[in-house]
Length: 390
Image (cartoon, rainbow, N blue to C red; front, side):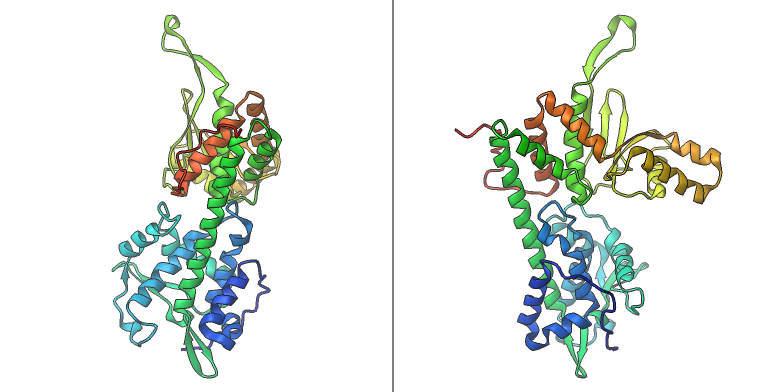
């Protein structure tokens, strides 16, 4: 066992850091500050819990935290915080861990990426010189372990096990995010009831959900609600024969949860058959991967960015040339980018929808989709008719 080095990066403390320190003090007393300074794992968790003080709209990072949570929980369930021999443990079976993380709050639709590699890759970005990888796995047996070196902190030649403290810290963070989301839903429902009296307040609130720093899931939900009613006013005349043409409104459908493995399709429009993908990355490889998933079928990208559409398009094209270098290949992919919708354009379409009288419907759609996405059931879950208070 090796003693960890002090964290060399200039990490920043935030609102939830006080909660972390309080829990450490509860477990380790006067040694709490030293444990914090020596533990790379706790400092990583500190970085991943920044959104606790930013309400429900900030990124939650549940995937990475839950990957840690389930392997450490398994470690504790087998009593290895109090005994030796973990190196000989057969490991936790993947399916058991995967099922467990999906039973945690907000975890129902989490994918396997964090458990398999993403959490480790993130950790290494924060600690590039660390000799430890947090989650260990055997691909042949599908067994997983927490790296015990990260759970045992050496202080004055004695080791302190932080496993229980880590679980309690993540539990505290979960509760904080649950409270924030509950307040978010209540705020939405209160605004829905008085939307006619305070339309500008409601508009400001919805636009705050379509911002670069907002949780990706809330941004996707808000984008869907706005575009659904924006296109609802657009008419199309279509049919298979001239004598049987019909007029329909464009209808946008959300194809699944934001974490669903749906092949890069978040919304589908009928009857035009347009595909929409919501993204926050400017990595062109991600865009082209989505295009490949639907066999180079045109996709409209809704991008969580305030950069101009021309700037976004230029960056995608330039980055593509760096990797492919062949103009014909790049142009083939670029031709599949049917439209780019950035935050300013999304805001314009929101304002157009409000002028058409859809403010209440958009807010109501955000409430409904948020409750589904975050598995929220409150005491008044069905009371969202939006009637004004007398």
